Length: 427
Image (tube, rainbow, N blue to C red):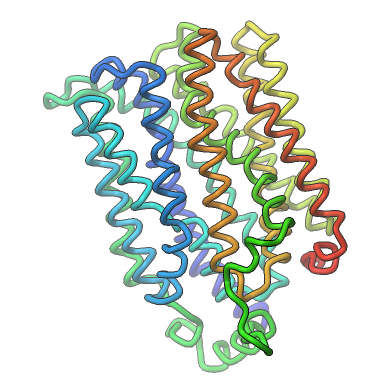
């Protein structure tokens, strides 16, 4: 029964949710490829582009926790559909920007539209996956992160080559073609997803009964006096987890926004930039799967989370000493592999540390805060350092410092007695 039910649940939910996440990530990061043409067309300086790109994370931060609470109230099926439909429309509408002000406005609205998607999916999966399955499932879901950029980079490069077709610029085609599919898939959510196992008509009565029983220990109400969902914000370990997540979040966000311009500075065409930009993400995808398997097999989270952060720091530092395209691509690959290898072990550790009553707020708060610091602040800082030094490589130095601090933070959490006691069981 267990094998049959979990096979049905995985095949029903994971492929669809990964496809949704792929589109979310493409629409979040395609501004990096679009900037190869858009910045000159609408008159954006490096600092203005960095500021506008970072505004996504400001509204994302502000609405992430409320979004997860709304998912609990209105149901995952309708709320995930709402997120996808609105972000697809807003992403496509970015083709209409005409200058810095409209660019800033659309990035703010896009962040508000997408807020809550990733933590919402993590929370949604806890409704369906018994605790013994969550580590591997989260790793499989998170693989969509590097795969999105691996697919979208050459696709975006090809769309940029449509410059002038039907009177539209290449970057406008990029936003339209990559934005609207999310809206279509959002409508499909209403028909494909079920809020809870009890509502899943694609499971038999016996299968629903087994899954309900398997989930009861993880989702049973907490006995005793009611504790505020926000109480976890007072615990030092929570902020250590936030800091740990910042290093990886900053690496993914900074490179997602600025890496295409860095690579094009070597004299590549737009299409060639897209192809080369996809290489680090392809390698990171494979490394992420192998690293997650190693973490599960050894039932070890702390070092499996810290080592990728140290890899980010080392790669970012060595880039400043490199001048050739091949070595830069190798080191960028190291930084992105670190950013994505981090995710499986980290979210397994964090979700095990959080109590069931804290999950909705805790997962969203960690993700939102780390995105604000790692995304909004670090993406802006990169633009400021570049403006002062005119060096894409030197602008990565703050990223290295943050990654070291994040690694030390996660090791402190992993060694605490409370985290060790609540660490996920070996799979």
